[in-house]
Each structure stands twice: as structure tokens, then as C-alpha cells.
Amino acid sequence: MEYSFPTILVLGSTGSVGEQALDVAAQCGITVKGISANRNWKRVAEQARQFGVEAAAMSDESAARELRAALADTAVRVYGGSEGILQMICETNAGFAVNSILGEAGLLPTLAVLDAGMDLALANKESLVVAGEIVMAKAREKGRRITPVDSEHCAIDQCLRAGSGKEIKKLILTASGGPFFGKKTAELQGLTVDDALAHPTWSMGAKITVDSATLMNKGFEVIEAAHLFGVGADRIDVVVHRESIIHSMVEYIDNSIMAQMSVPDMRLCVQYALTSPARTPAVIPPLDLLSVGKLSFYAPDEETFPLLAAARRALALGGAAPAALNAANEVAVGAFLERRISLLRIFEIVLEVTQALSHAKEAHTLSEILDIDRAARELALTRI
Ligand code: MG
Image (cartoon, rainbow, N blue to C red; front, side, top):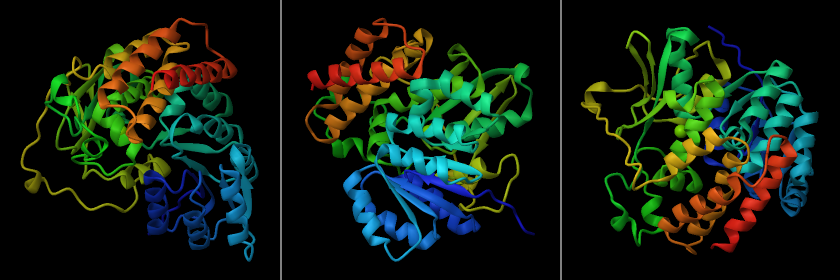
């Protein structure tokens, strides 16, 4: 049987999810029309040739010059700078754009994809954390779909097929708990980047692996779920599930719980985001339940890991708070990865900056949100 897949752009094509999206494209015979990345022009040149793309963009201008030279013998249009990425989106139409850009830098591309009339497979959760209302309103205005490329939200999307919106009691996000599960604050002292990067079940980029270790990632995912599915934070629970086999659940009003299970592999999320509600032959290995044996569940330790609760507060406050939270976290995690601050200092900086800016001023428009983002980054830098 023939399956029909949309053509795609892959934004952030050299990151972990971007590479996995291209792997899905290769396995399924999906046409990739454009790719973008930050600085790694050598890898982008390889990808451009392998997939025969029409366009490629580098947000770093000098990397764009290198790429242009490397692809001089091809017809690939090469764009440079963050403006160049937006221009590529605007001039390279595909069915879907997979946005796997890292951090707040993914927000303007998200809006550009929707403006260009493409559906969005969203791996850049920061778009929804920073400007969830604006992004969801834009999708409605343009009549485009946003399908999540995040294992939890992909699972919820699938579980929601079992009931109607008004039958939902709550969403239950699962969390692996990260490498520091079970540790108390005193034991977190002195932990290093290498400790944080040893994720038990998922293979991911460095930034999101640290966010998983601090539970900031789970906090972002609560905000993401609230926007994607229109469910209030008071009806989004988090449960630690060490095996990462159940990717999330939906509990209905009759107390029936639907769960989605598979081996932990993001390629399923990319595939489902591009084809849902249809299902197409597997790109990941099957789940062997007998080798899993047991599934376990624990409450998250919100006292030791305060950023999950901070995300809930930021979502409830709205306005500037989620943007400040994200910006402070990006700066603090960046400094941690450069070994300039300790893990516990991430908590302090994020809590301080978010608190200082949450009530600073109203932030509803895109430019107000970008102002808060800048202010939070500046403030966080003074705390490093
Ligand atoms: Mg996730």
C-alpha cells in the first residue's frame, strides 16, 4: 500500500530532533524541501545533498557564507541570518514545517510557518511557553494545525482520540525524573554537567537534558499542554515514571485512563505529527512488554526541584511571567553547560529573575514579550 506524506521543512536540522526528523523522512520517502540550522554548515551541506533540498538557511551569517560556497555547484538557495530563516520559510512552501529550533529563537519561525500557510509539527516547546496565546491564535486565524513533536503531547494527542473534550477529567504527563531522581537538595550540591547529561532513558540535546534533570522541562510541558489542548494547569498532573514506556495519559470523567506506550524514541512522534490521525508503518522498533516487566509511578519532588511549581505559577500569572521564566532558564542553563555556575544556582537564578519580572509590566503583544525576554536575559546575566 502507498502512503501519502506531506512535503516538509526541517528547522533546526542538525539538532537531536532535527536529525531524527530527517531519519524519518529518509525511511518514509518524505520530500524535504528546506532545512535550517545555526552554525553547523558542514552537516547542513551533507543533509542538503542527501535530501536534494531546494533551500537551506544558517542563522549564523558566516556559516551561511561557508554553506553558499560548499553548495555552489547545486541549485540550493542559501539564506543567512535569523531574517534569512524567516525568508526561507516564506519562499519555500511545504505541507509541514518541523520546528526543532532550540529555545526562544524558535518563536518567530513558528509564527512565520503559520503565516506562510503551512502546518506546524512543533518540537520547539519554547514557542508555546513564551507566547502560547499568540501562537495558538495565529494557528486559528490561519486555519493551520499544530501537531506536537514532544513525546508527552504526542501521547496525549493519541489518547484524546478515545473521548470528547468535555469528557476529559485531567491530563497526566509522565516524567522520567531525570538522572537526579530521589536526590535531595544537599545531594545536588557539586553535581556537574556530566552528571546532568547522563539521562536514563531518552537520548536528547544537552540543553533539554539539563532541563529534564531540573524538571524545568516538565514545567514547560505543563504550559505547552495547557495551550495545545485548552486544559487548565489545575487539570494537568505530573507523575514520575522511570521506565519512559507510558509517554502520557488522559483520564476521563468515568475514571477510565488512556495511556500511550512505545519504546522511547522521538521518531514515532515526528512520524505521527506528520501523518495523524492516520497511522503509517513503523519507523521505530516494537515494544517488548515482557522485557519491560514492570511499570512504576512516583510523585515528583517539587520541594527539591522547584522549577515545576515555578512553571505552574508562571502559567497562572500569564503575561510576562512565562517569557521571563524561559529566558532566565536559557541563560542559566547555558552558563551551567559552560561550567560557570552550579546546578542549584540554576534554580536560584530562574526563580529570582522570574519573580523580579513577572509583575514588571503587561506583556501581551509579541513586541512586549520580546522586550521581557531581553530584560530577563540581561538580568539573568548579572546573576551568573
Ligand atoms: Mg517531552
